[in-house]
Amino acid sequence: MFEQIISIDRMEQAVELFGSFDENVRQIEKEFSVEIISRGSELKVVGEPENVSKGIRAINGLLTLMNKGEELSSQNVRYVMSLVNDGNEDKLSGMMTGCICISAKGKPVKPKTLGQKNYVEAIKENTITLGVGPAGTGKTYLAVAMAVAAFRSKEINRIILTRPAVEAGEKLGFLPGDLQQKVDPYLRPLYDALFDMFGAETFQKHQEKGSIEVAPLAYMRGRTLDDSFIILDEAQNTTAEQMKMFLTRLGFNSKMVVTGDITQVDLPDGKKSGLVEAMRILKNVEDIKTVRFNEKDVVRHKLVQDIIKAYEKSEEEKKRR
Image 1 (tube, rainbow, N blue to C red):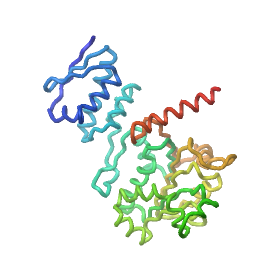
Image 2: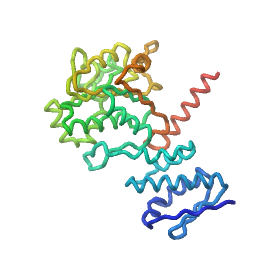
Image 3: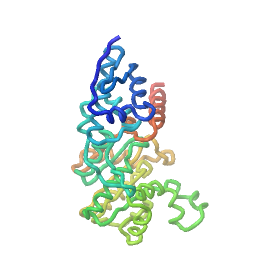
Image 4: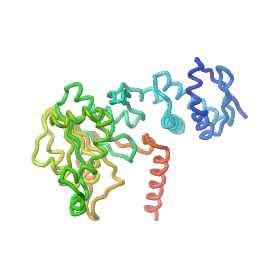
């Protein structure tokens, strides 16, 4: 057995590093098959040489996060371990980027993975950004945060959030209320993100003034959207015609973000996804950037990552058969 010692500067750092009921250290021990022993301001990592090296690198990665003011969570412990496994933990300090905006509850909103950082930078630098990847990667939430930041700094006058109501045919007819009430369930995730950023009361005020609009994609037809930050969510469920219609709404001094998961297309059989088409057609167009997320960028419950991996594995097996 091999062992290596790492020194911790401050006792409170050691307490945060270990986490509640030592859960952070337990994750590292389990992932790399090592034992971590605390001795005052020193940690001893015991195991096979390669595993000890990985354990030490993971601990150093977490200390880097803590020194940058990040609170440790189960998610970022998992993420640091995945970077260590890929030999990419040196990219960790480059991931640290400023706060995008402050939520209604006073929490700073910032990227938590390299994929999210690339996405935020793409939105800053391009007029149109396509964010493509699995559920839980923060595609919509970060796009809304960027829209709120641009709105608060008066770079734009309006935030427009839209998504296709895939079942907008007969099934919507069975729901009670007027058209807006019928489509509201489809728009709920967008409302949730805005409530989180603005608070319900401020959101209501801006919506009444017309400076925030949440509407189904069909409402975009025939409009030109100037001085706006426009987000199209669940774009994998647009047809090619709808996607073209949406992208050509772009006006002066506006930004567009299109998000979707091309593995979850709910269109009727035979219909091609407008998002898949747009990725192909627009890949060499200047000022349009596609950012792809993978399961490592999932910032929800660990099980979401495991579910995505299991489905990907199943899809690969199907293709091989």
